[in-house]
Amino acid sequence: MTTVVPTSEEDPSLAVVRFTAELSWADAGPEVAQGQVNRLCLEAQECMIQNRWLDLASLMLTSADVIFSKASEKDLECAYTVICNLVNKPESLDQVHEMAELIATKVAHQLSDKHVLRLKISAKDSFNFLVKYLETFSGGDALTVAEAKEEAVHAIIEFVKAPDMFQGDLLDMPAIAQLEKDAVYALEYQLLKIFLTQRLDAYLDFHSSNSDFLERYGLVHEDCVAKMRLISLVDLGNSGSGQIPYSLIKDTLQIEENEVESWVVKAITAKLIDCRIDQINQVVLVSRCTERVFGLHEWESLRSKLVTWRGNIANVISTIQANKISEDGTQAVQGVTTR
Image 1 (spheres, rainbow, N blue to C red):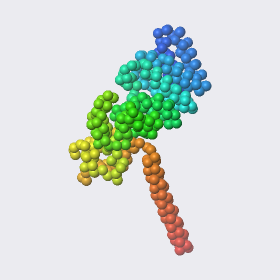
Image 2: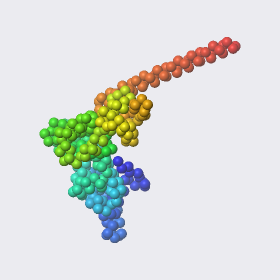
Image 3: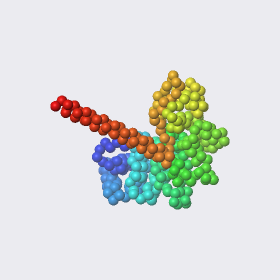
Image 4: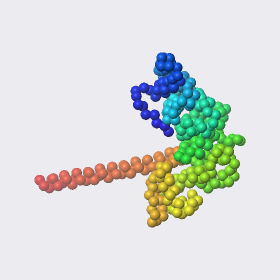
């Protein structure tokens, strides 16, 4: 995701307003342009002081067409990162929802070609923003949650397509969970569940029955297989004893034996796993694996590990203290003997 690094004391939001205003009024001449830029900046400052974040987002998006047509790729990505970060400002979930919808609608109007839009804005930035939007829906109001079905499907497809996204708590979101038994979108939910909780064999079974479904969303089978192989390797690391035999990797990933090490290296490169390859014993020694989801089971596992570590540390401290007392006693006896 894009990181905005401040290069001056000016607030990033105000800097975006100034930048877009200067682009918008560049052809009006310096005298007219300066006055309009100052006016818009003052209006933005008032919005920030009064915590009118929705008004600020609306003001920043007024010149969205100018940003798309005139800004460089880097400036465009930076500007929309700042705008999207405004979603974190309001305290009211209703305002967050309204702002997210405003931004999504405004961006969608700029380009009718979604493929061009993906080139304009980082796919990961777009996905993260979409997830923030979906998080604003609670499970209390079924009618309201139902309004987010298309956005939920979009998030699922973007996650599956992305070659560098392997984890997420999407299944727990009410906006996505509602699709599990949906008459129209149940397959989309099933696909997400495979990528977050299952292995390659489950995906291949799904593909054999739903190849047309995948093609409809522009999902490339070979890319999905590659991603599922990495995911399956990570799952082996998380479910085993810390040692994964080459033969198990070969069978699970459905690859040749001479490909095992290259797939392990790919997983290491993607920062999905930390391990050592023992070529002599034909095993992979795992020290860390990425969790695809982090739900109740993972929290319980973490709690168990922390309790164990705390117990081990307490034992070490007790041993050190006992040794210190013993040493102090020995030194005291030696001192008395010397006298």
